[in-house]
Image 1 (cartoon, rainbow, N blue to C red):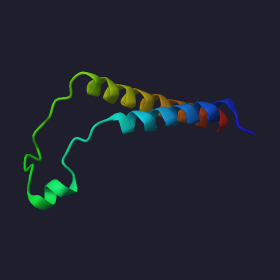
Image 2: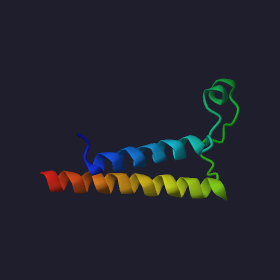
Image 3: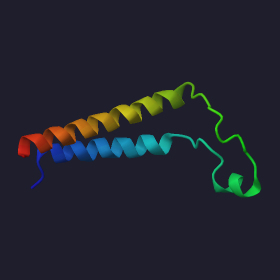
Image 4: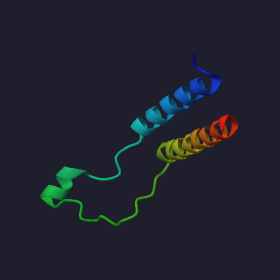
Length: 77
C-alpha cells in the first residue's frame, strides 16, 4: 500500500518531468557539432521571461523533491 509521501513523490516527479519538457534546448545539438555550426560553445546565453520562470520552478521542485526524500529517509531510518 502506498504511503502519503509516495503520492507526493509521484506528483512532484511528474511536475519536474513536465517542466523539463517545457524548457527549450540550449544548444544546436549533434547536427551543429557535425556541420561545425554554432562554434560558440562557451558563450553564455541569458534566459528571459517564461524560460527563466520555468528554470527556477524546475530547480525549486527538484530541491523540494530532495528535501522530502531526505526527510522521509530520516523518519523511517
